[in-house]
Amino acid sequence: MDFSLSEKTQTMLAMIDELVTEELVPMEEAFLRKPFRELLPEIEKKREKVRQMGLWAPGHPEDYGGMGLGLVDLGLISEVLGRTPLGHFVFNCHAPDAGNIEILHLYGTDEQKERWLGPLVEGKIRSCFSMTEVEMPGSNPVMMETTAVKDGDDYVINGQKWYTTSADGAAFAVVMAITDPEAPAHHRASMIIVPTDTPGFDLVRNINVMGHAGDDWASHAEILYHSCRVPQSNLLGPEGHGFVIAQERLGPGRIHHCMRWIGICNRAFDLMCSRAASRTIAPDRTLADKDVIQTWIAECAADIHAARLMVLNTAWKIEKLGWKEAREDISMIKFVTANTMQKVIDHALQVHGGLGMTDDTMLAFFYRHERAARIYDGADEVHKLSLARRILRQYR
Image 1 (cartoon, one colour):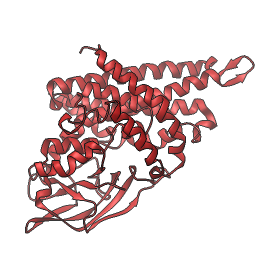
Image 2: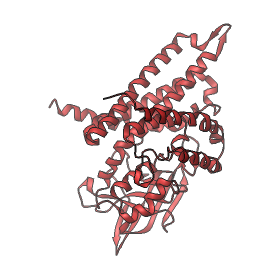
Image 3: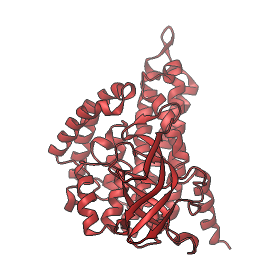
Image 4: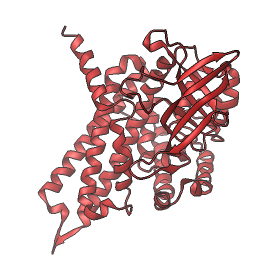
């Protein structure tokens, strides 16, 4: 792998870093204290500035107005944007829209692309991805109760979903539902576009996550599909290919997540070191003089560096060989980076003491909302077991 960066990439990263530092980080106090909708007018001003800088939608297709960058460059950008919760949204490369844009670009019909893909890339609408179910184990995604039954030219969808991120205010959902219960397990489900104003699409609530329900994009919803009728033309890709498409979505998507987590690590590490160097604990002594603090800083620096190189190497491998050839790497970076992030945030919070428990820094927010990194997109344990089985096949 060539670790050198082109002059263009270096310039781009410097521009993004300056905007994040000078314009987005100062918005975090309002982000932590106000409903997200109240921030949207100011956020839109920042988004317009990003458009004018030519940095809009860095990973999305050029023919729809994005920059069309590869995974390595996009990963490096995600690292910078990940320093603040507003970063990816302002640059229009945020989840879950980023994954839905990939699906629509690969599998959408011309009509679907015109109606949904174009406006998504332009930032005129938002979307959500409706897969996780209340009563079914996320660790075994082929277990699903939501059904889509054909009736004339329509699908009639019934089921209950939750953790449908950003459903509040979204224009449409991409829904995973069983279309053929008699098919082999991995060919039973399909992906279907459901406009959120469809009768039978019922957003029950924004779920309280660690005490915060959130709103608009910054939320996770519970949704009830009750005799929700949509045309069969809303099918994404071939019928029964829902899980195949989901894997194609999740593979590269984990690069985005993991590099965002590295960005969070960098931010937490900076806060930890600054606090340690400035916090007086005795005359002429600061926390940074403590051996245990120095040990934490050294370990965190090494762990972040190792995780970062693993993720960039995986991004490079996917670009060169495809996501199937990088399956082991994708599993590794998922649990390694998530645990590295949790360790760094925890140490940074500990160094801040009581201050770390408040929303006077970003650490408590990161602690609340990023603990789920070890659960979503496959729990750590699932990735470890899957990886171990693939490795052991070589020895059996």
